[in-house]
Image (cartoon, rainbow, N blue to C red; front, side, top):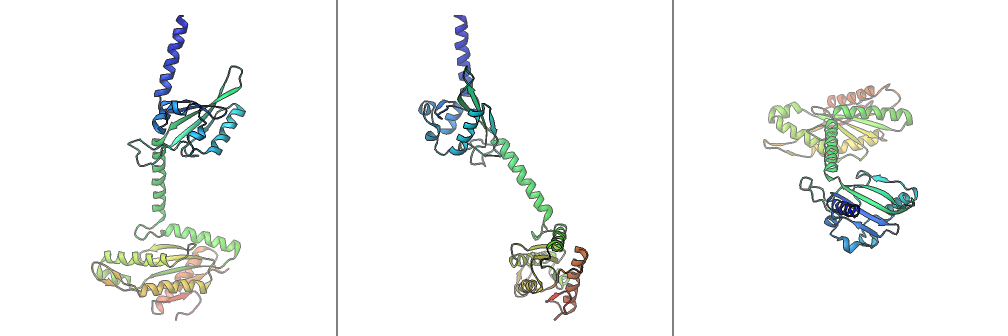
Length: 322
């Protein structure tokens, strides 16, 4: 009798533990009928254990990924081995609202899932146990860290004032484009341009107004480019553009659009309304340059020719300024 009392006591202790533990516990028979549905599942689903018992899980909870979960369960039952799925593979199995006050920014509870076979005395799998772990805090922290790292990476690649690529990142892309040309031989052009008489803008209106002019130049430039083009701030008031699969005439068309848009626009600052122009140099890659630096030098020489020719103009390398 004492043994039986101990067994009953142990059974009730086990039931109490399963009801109070902060882990979802669901036991299914091989027809997917719910045999156990603990307190965690009741609290987060709003479905009581008495209501769901002996119901087919997919009928009682219709928003479950039926095809995915049934395939997992069948594999566990067939191989008689457990399987594990993390929130990184599938954010959640049950669509439970996130109730954690610390991580309230996430709409749903992130979950890890373990699916285990439960065998009878003959060794055959008779039931399947699903254990659902709330990992919202861990997942939220990981996601926040990932976003922070991505932001830091973007900041390390971009110019803070304009949002364009910074010089180092942009030059790396020129190098890659140069190698792509050597491999495939497709037309490609780079552009160097700067703001005419920018020192006079700073001296007359101040550096804050000068910054507004630089930001306006970047905005006009980015708004004039195709998705495949890459623009960067080379330094100070100087900018660069990579134009893949673009010959000289195509590059001129794009650059003339940028030049004209800037010439006809007005930058409104707290000091004054400012109008300005830019000079632009183009170099379409040929077999002449031995490396990307020589290619870049050609674009710089074309920019110098545009300056010498009177500014506010577009000049291609090897062509006279006009």
